[in-house]
Length: 82
Image (tube, rainbow, N blue to C red; front, side, top):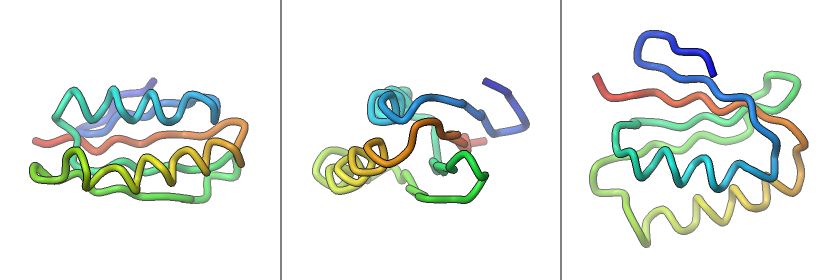
């Protein structure tokens, strides 16, 4: 994990994506999550607004499950609230 101004970067295996994103959401201080593959290509971006909880995040978490099946290693970039 690297920490830049208002950003955190995590390199994780694809099988751990969903759990890590759920953990980040529970912390409640993220504005956006960007997922990049091993080639540093953005494969998904999820804006997290204060009202986007529960049912609104369900489709995003389902998409993460599909992404996890396709990638072996990825990078999560978490943009934090100021």
